[in-house]
Image (cartoon, rainbow, N blue to C red; front, side, top):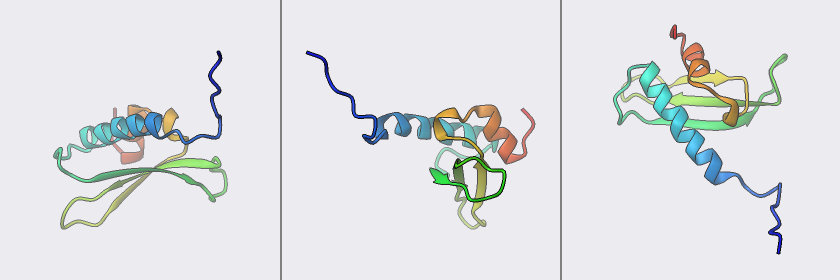
Length: 91
């Protein structure tokens, strides 16, 4: 019996693992403590020249303004180098 895979089903498991990886890269390239809150979301991009979906990374260091990094690609396509580039860090 062949199991049906719904292409419209949520991709939470896959995205959760990728989100964790992106958070680790962000902390690493920005030299942040492990307990610094980092958020990762895949959002629609409305800017001209931007792809339909972008990955937005939020760095919430206590006592500092929120830092927002934008990687103009889907979350599954984000690499450590792209995170470093968005953070303005040479890799």
